[in-house]
Length: 267
Length: 301
Image (cartoon, rainbow over all chains, first blue to last red):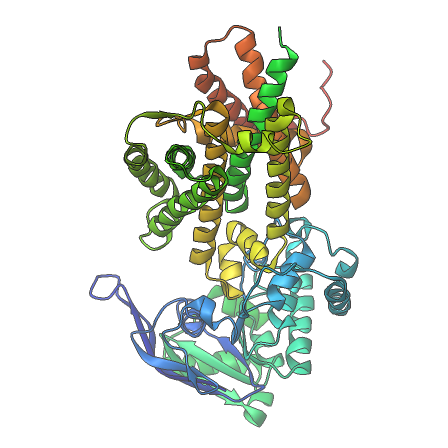
């Protein structure tokens, strides 16, 4: 499904701020794999996701989806294969446009857009039934402008938009980090349900270790641009949060000093 | 006094300028892009149509060509901005400046008279069942109605939605697979096409094209957009389109009235700038006032 091979990216090359964001990273995902990605700040999690999404072109290595080498494709060209939910609830939706307008744009993700009238009755009915599944009452607010929704509602809508037209690969970049705990739980639950029911191949970055182990079927840990831990199957189901923290310390050879990770571990 | 004759003339001009305001709305509101190209493309439309007409081209065809001349100007601004990464304002200024020379080249001199030539209005007047006194008014109205409808329809198509989203949230619409560079170029092209179209109408009504007739056009356009939005509202696309058209007409009436009151024509630009300034500043003042006094009522001593 997704094949990431020997991906390397160095930012600010040959300057005092030189930073190796990705160091020969390789990762293979099978169809339906749901991998959670953890690691301290600057470990390369987001860089890995950005390279897959096409935000930057890697220095070396390649990204292949379903046998198609997309390493040098512009982000908008990859949209037919990949959909993405960002950390900021504001960035996934167009605020001045209505819920139904946002959904129709998502339905056309990666497809050719024409001069046809965008909305019609059957599409509205389809959106209603999909919005109903979110359980947020949005199905009655199709013509509400998105700027009037709360952060959690917007993020749930973004998630729906990302999966409405099934992508080959779903990228979730700490998509619950900006939400209050209760809403975050709801969005995570929704994420797991959607990904499972449509067997979506998914990559999810999280700082919450409990989430990392409870969601999906595989967990990788990154440190200094490399994958230092990759667990699945029984090894993963036997894993506890405290052991995960321990392994992190051992594998990386440094004492963990990331507050958010520590906090997530103790909760 | 403000006679009926002046009112009719003002309404005619207002309708023609409303076409320009529709163009400004497409960039300023839909794309969220302050496009100064308008200053040059308005003149370009007038110049192109005028030159073609005095050289014997069918005036309807000349008007259509003026539209396409404007779109080309918009495409240049779009390419400067998206491909060469020049800021929005500077891209517009570059095209606007270049167009000043180009327009003079097109015309060959600083102004062209269209007196006693065939125009779309003389053609329209000679149609049967058309009252010659109201021919200009009727044709302008029909044109604005059709163009307003087309803009409304376009903004509700799949491409139209992508254009609106480009102005709203580029990151989002790019991740939905839309090439936002193309969208911006498209928006700027359509906008400047409309502006040039408006210029060609105004030239044929006033019976001359002048190299400096576009000066101050962008601020007039912005003022019209803002006036319309404040008075009519923007709750939906249909409403916003009607608002900006009415804004264009109302703006012309404001200008006509202050001229009647004895203000010099040369003071108009200052007046327009003040209108836009007030309109731009008032929301922030309003929110400050509400913040100081959340109940919305005047506090009693």
